[in-house]
Length: 171
Image (cartoon, rainbow, N blue to C red):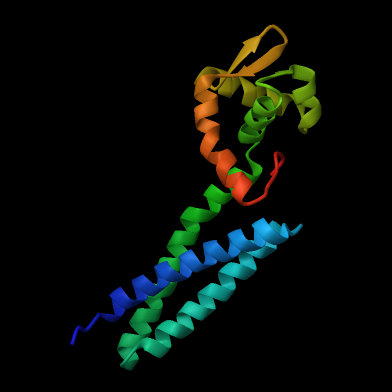
């Protein structure tokens, strides 16, 4: 008979719970497209977090084993969430990412005023565009910005994920 330590059980269940959370969030965001994405993120994580803690407790065999398994499971889920949340919010809220998507969707070129009109402040957009230009993601062509091939390669995986999560061009 193979005996798995409570820590390994907790880590495996925590990882499985996190994958369940990401899957649940994706399904809800993709199929229902709710207005409150942050609430979906929080509620789905909380539900899976509690469920995995309970499951780890039930599967444990001794009081000490149960407790250590639950601690490892919830820490595993929490650590994965800490890594995941910034990644998710970059996809949904990054102005640089949104600027490049707008450029790409407008056949790779758009006037400065059109970009300024799309976002909150001219100073903010100018700063982001200058940074992206220095990084080689966009080029300035008189009064227009163009997305570069490097920018297209950078944006491709983000477009795929935004499509899967049905975020649309604005987040």
